[in-house]
Length: 485
Image (cartoon, rainbow, N blue to C red; front, side):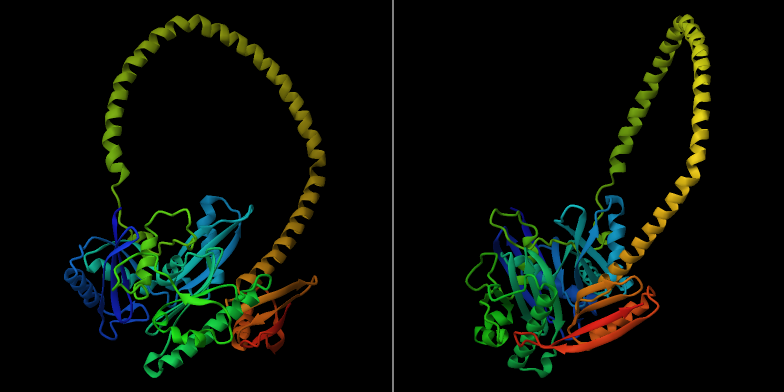
């Protein structure tokens, strides 16, 4: 099995791993000066590329093809549902829907997506909007290091790939970066990537902050999936620095009673190998391996590398043109002999052609009679055409009314952010009442502002906004009611 080299550029260090199948052969890391990489964005591409080359040279790793992973900070992950549309317009339909559900300007992001298994009549899509500046900086830096980059992964998606479970919660941190993911049916339903101010926080303070974010994530998921909320049967897997601090796990769970353990290594390696350090590299490498019979890893295998960066292969035209020229020359020679032979055959068929022309005259007379019958039929159709026009107009008015209402419902749903959960949308013929929950008052007011900015309604009124304390005594959320006129 071919070897795979994976590269992960973090804010504080570079990590490289070489695997052969599920066996780790080499691994190494190199620290980076503070400020060279900030929140995944490489500030000095030349200097970081030199550090990469020095690391590979020191570890005697060939500078060839690599798979890289970038930070998930400022990336936005969503699952959207579209009606079944033809393949030739599917890409455009996904982009249009992404423009509606992604809260940041799409001209600042690249859009990557993967089609998911869907019910008949609909198309489910996992989409990722990842920052252009971060993506470009990683790709350019790897290229400057003399490496051939064909696949770009995103760190939290790599982590999800390491959990060989259909339903699980993953929490991973390294220095100031934290990734939290909720996976249901092998698909990440919620992914949060955030940065912590580690300079002013002790380990206990960082764990307390992570625990609060974990509780907030679970509360948000449950409010969006009341029919199947996360319960204590869903395990929590930790990686990174948390995996080295098992004494802190009770603090992480707080009042939760879920089973917690380290995210197991998907690869085998020597005793001195620490899988929690290189878990993103291993998750990135898994995408290159064949799927086994017992595989329950994440289904998401997105390549976040924009198409114009991908290496160009040999053009099919360069291979086909010489072949086509030879075929054309041969065809011309054959054609000349064929035409000469046809001339001789045409001379012999001339008497038969004259007989067919006589029969054609008779057929034309029959056709004239048929044309008269058609004219009479068209006259009858003209008499009922006004009635058909009225019915068509009525049908069109009904269709437009339905499309307007459907468009309102879609806009209300698609414009809500991950901090908002909708409960009911009621239309009384003149106005729409929307109820739901939000993690914060600010999120609710921002949602109301977005609805106003859509210009679909004359007025968007916040009728009520009340604090609600869930039964499990977790963090409070806020109920709301809007009136859209």
